[in-house]
Length: 191
Image (cartoon, rainbow, N blue to C red; front, top):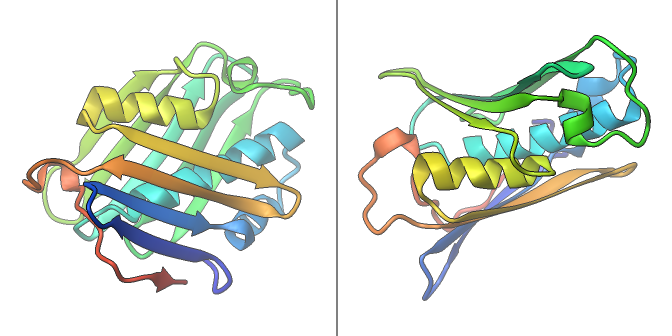
């Protein structure tokens, strides 16, 4: 994350809900500036950067999360890697034309979302779900319901001005430390 990008954590009093709010606009611009990606791919990479930053903010250990889309469409691969220090990087592979009005499904085709959680100490965990949703946020919400059984909502927005998003998640009744997710504190962290 660049010095201008920001991450804020929230814990809602009187509700078992945590939240993360992130702006990764500078990181997004850096990620795509030396590539000739079509506009929909740039937008999708922005969404994936937001999502990865939100997910890594929930880590309770030193490690990494990789969010990856793979499919048989013209966008064969899009991957973003981030760590607990909010260091993010990503790339996309294109093997065909991607019109400006492309959707997630028309770009990726028949594909899936892979989330890999790699702690520095301990075992790696990988979750895979089909692309059931119309947007990346919907696909990630589906992942959380299937893999973590945690009701989660993601709101991700990109525009010419930047990329930002929010994650709201019902906290588990008991934090056992499984899969590395943890409730966040009240401290804000700016990067």
